[in-house]
Length: 621
Image (cartoon, rainbow, N blue to C red; front, side):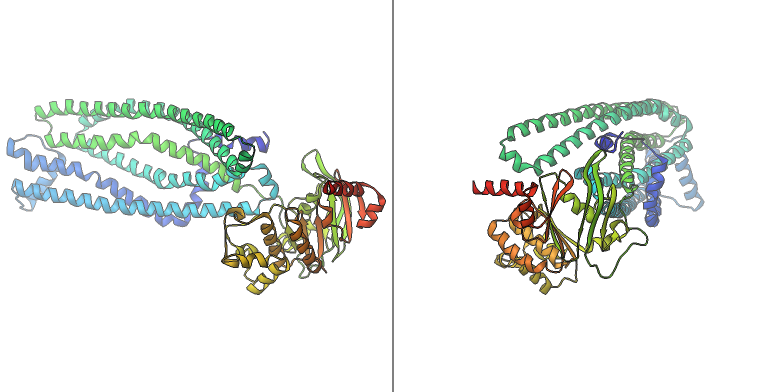
């Protein structure tokens, strides 16, 4: 299965409910917080033991201080006998009212201690979960920043965001409500089993008689819940994908008036999600009432057999009541096993997807050691370069040219000719299939990647601005760009006038993707950003295509000064922006067909001449 197809079905895969390999990797994230794990385990064991106190105290109170007031009893619980023997050995005599008051205080104290223990247990577990999530998200984000651009071509952003949000949340639930809780459940169940057999082994066997029914019901629910969980997840993934796509493209939806069609499509997907949830609800609606019925059957058996034993004076009433209380504490964790199973299953599936991302090694990395000269001259060379984004579909066919330091070279051609691909290869967003791309005579694959890219400034047609303010979008975190340099860069590209007209100037907040700024204003900010970093090489990829004529003329005037002495590669459709270039390269269907100055190419009456005639004919019309 190809990577693309595998990615489409990635959300549907559930995997094993428990995978030892994945669990070992997850444990590594717990190790830095092992003291929290130890504290949580100790606290949960303490809370499990404290939950055993209530029924025992109840049995003692009834057998020693309540039952004797009504009639003598021949049978007492082991706990009652132990307490009575301890009091006798120390000469302690309590009247029934005093004894009940003391037992009540002990019971209340156990409840208060249990509250404190559960509070700290929950706090420690949640704190550990949040820190593990922080570590995981930081590691995922760092990995995404190192991956090559081609990875993002094949993986939708929404799915990658899901790795950082939903999948990490699923692991948090595993650590806070799954593993440690299971330890507590096991400890509680073990304690109850021990106490029940200690108090009366025959009644204990009667209590556990319903376990086969309860386990069979849980297994049935687990199987059905697994299928319904998968179905709901698939439908939810489709809703998210549809929602994100149509919100991003809302301007197109409204422009072509397809709101009703989009609403109808969403309604269909939404109904599928609803139906999947209804099917899941059916299993829950059957399971939990069935659990109540089976546990009620267990309570009935305890009352029937225990009541007979009480009547025969072989069992105390206190023990019977304690058994009823313990039974409720015993059956509840068993009923919750299915929920723990779902948590574990979701966590294993999420960890599988997270580790698949973390295990992916970037294919474009700096060599060791990489070339990182202190001064970059700016010479660019393409030598018989061939490249394909997809195997078998070559975009560039043997491109060869050279740009001297300080030279301005324009690249023109029809859409799809391969112009922007030249910039992608120079910046080493992609590696060539064959041939060589060089800067200062050194293959870009031998350069230190950070040094290479900081030497090149790039302004794209589709400008991306981050949330924050205008100054932050120009600096991009580079503290060495002071306010004076910031203003100078903005002034050089004629962005300063519109920035100063804003109420807060450079401190003006920028909303998502630069909402609130015009296309032209965003491109001026991008110009200021590139020039503030003072790159030795500057790439303008359709950078003035969305700027009005007046603004374009202002930018051209600034560029005459700013590009002087700097190697520049200007990619453009509009030929008016490239006429003053030192040299113009004409690409056609991935091949370099013409090269020369504006006048030379017009005189040659080739592809450039036809492009020029077509463009100015359209403008004249």
